[in-house]
Structures are given as C-alpha cells and as structure tokens.
Image 1 (spheres, rainbow, N blue to C red):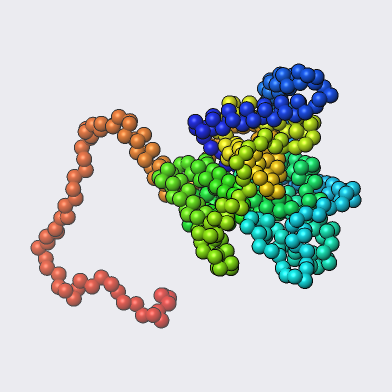
Image 2 (cartoon, rainbow, N blue to C red):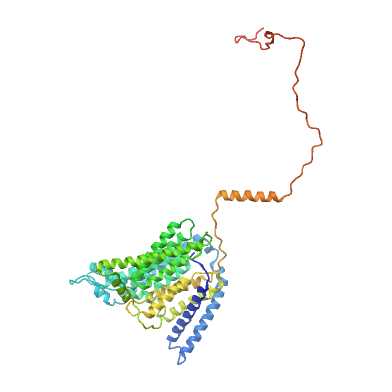
Length: 485
C-alpha cells in the first residue's frame, strides 16, 4: 500500500541531503548533552553521529533477516492485520486524549496576541490580518470565545479538538499515500511528541493550519485510489483538479501549503499509471490539471479578498508577499523535538530508511523528503510568530516509519490484469491453431477395395396390359365390420 516510484537521479540526490540532515541533527542532539561531553563535545558528537549511522546499518540488516520470523503466520492474514491495525489506532487515540487532558491540568494557557484580537469587544470584530491562516484561526477562536465569555480555557479546548482530529486525518492520509506502518508510526509520534502536544497552551494558528494541511493529505490520498484504477479517467482528473484548487487555497493561507504539490505530483508519477497506453502523456496531463487547479484556487482567494476589502489584485499580491513570514537571515534548523532521547530515536529510525533505500528497487520517500526540506528551509528563514516545528516533526515521524517498514521482506508484486472472456477464448483458439499447424500433415493412400456401384432402377415390361380399374389393391373395409366369421 502506498505510492511507490522508481528511483531517479533526484532520488539519490534527496537521499544524500536527507542522510546529511539526519547526521547533523543527531550530532546536534549529542552536542546538547553537555554532561556527557567536555570541551571536545563537538568532535565527540560528530563521532557519535557516525557511530549511530553505523549502528543503523547493522540494525537494519538484523531486522531485515528477522522480519519473516517476527511477523509470523498470524500477520500474514489480511483480516488479522486489519484487526490489529484498528486496535492500535483506537489505543493511540485514547492515549492521546488522556495525555492532553493530563497536560491541561498541569499548566495554564498563555495569552497570545491572537487571543487578544479574538476576544469579543464592544469596539468591533476581529481586526484584519495579512497572514491568511492567522486571520482564519482568529475568526474561529473569536467564534468559540463568544460562546464561553472570552475564557482562555475554551481556546485550549479548541486546540485539543484540532489536534485530535489532526491525528486521525494524519493517520488516514499517510496510510493512503505511504502505507499502514508509516501511518501508525506518524500517529504514535505526533500523539505524544512534546513539540506538538504542548501547543494546547499556545493559542496560535499552527495547530489549526496543521489540521487543514493533513486534511489536504487525506484528499490527495483519496485521489490516489482513482489514479491507480484503469478506466476512471474522469474521476482521476476531477480529483486532481480539486486537489489542486485546495492546494492553491492552502498556499494563499500560508506559503507552506504549496508543498502539497509534492504529494499531488507524486501520485501522478507513481506506480498506478504503469501498464497503460500513453502513460507518459497521461502523467503530463494530470500534473497540468493539478497545477491549473492550484493557480485557480490561489487566484480565486485573491479575487475574494480583493472583493471583500475593496483593494486591487496587485495590492492583494503585495500584501500576500509581505505576509510571508520570511526574513533575510537564516538560522540553524529546528530539531524534530526537544527531548534528547526521543529526538535521537527519531533520527535513528529515519537513518534506517536511508539504509533501506539501497536494497529496494522502488522507493516512496522522495515526496516526504521534499516536504521535510521545504518545511526546514521555511523554518530557518521564518521571521514571524508562525513557526513550522510541528510540520518538521510530522515529516520526521513519517520518514521514521518508512525506515522501520524498509526492513520488511517484500515479495515481487504481480499486478492482476483484467482480461475479458472473448480474449481468453481467442487466445486458446490461436494456441490450438498454432499447435495444429506445427504438426506434420497425414497423407492418405488410395482405397484398394472396389467401391459399391451406383443403383440403377429397373423398368419392368410385361406382355399383358392390366386395366386401370383392376389396379386397385386397397380394399375398403366398413368401419362397423368386426371381422367375425
């Protein structure tokens, strides 16, 4: 399950960048533990990062060899897999609810500028904000506060609901795009990751925008179903067009929304189009539909904003570019988490994917590496209060799941071809004709026995001519005659 693509030159380049990023971040984690390192902590951190990668290589080979033993015969059945999957998802979701309830009791929410703007006042409604995602979140927060009397606890409840819904959407979206194990790993990490869970205290739009983003992932994942089935071209193009429109809207709300194009283009170039006639042309048209939809969604949002504010499209464009939270100075990229142990484990699992990349003909990590790199660059250049740490953590979580799943032994997949009954019959008839034509023909000899002569009817001639009246040989019998003598 999941989108699988053939390896290209871009795949190897992305692998190199991702491996380097994993090594750098693991070195950062080790260097942060000053209690273990002295003045030579930086060099020791680099050495430990290299040793961690070497350990990932060894663990990958051991896990790959033991994969068949660990799974057992029970997990080979599809029903058992689904039952175990449902059980794990319900357990993770319930644990996430309890964890956030416990966090809610441990601290109080921090009052942010979004809360101040969202509070119901006599002066008016929500002020205009150039950043689209921040404005939408402030409007929703204001609506929630209107029912609770401007209590900050209502904002915390909104954050919890958004996070719980995001976990479910993340699971189903990643499952459609990448696979079952990757989805479980991503849900487990994001359910308990401190960077994400602690956002229930901060009334900021990151959790809201992450909810919208994973909703887009699920929509693109549903488009993949139509994309992998033949004979559903209308549904395929319509789904990609809608996904493109949603991407344009998300790109208008925040620049990170444009990274949804990585996943839309990924499902277009995946294994679903192989085997069709004119597959290359079909991929080009699908990507074109997706790009046109993105442009239409972005321009549509600009037109709606211009109509509501009374500004021109050029002024709206300048406002959007000014609202992009980027600065001219790049800072060091954020790590996937603040905990040393948890961050190291996440980097280690991601390194497993870097190792398994070389032992599989197909890969499904390109679009996630592109997403992670884009989120990392935006976080490095971010100048506003809107950060991308949640998105970076989700990217690392999915890549860690890909690394764990890469240790499985995957057999050769054979695609079932739909063949009609007349084709099968014609195939068999042609095969019989070929077999008949290949045999030598039998040569018959002439029959040595005499053949029967043709019968000629003889005409009888007599000297006496019988009168016609005497030629009646049929004797008429009375019906009442009982032949009694």
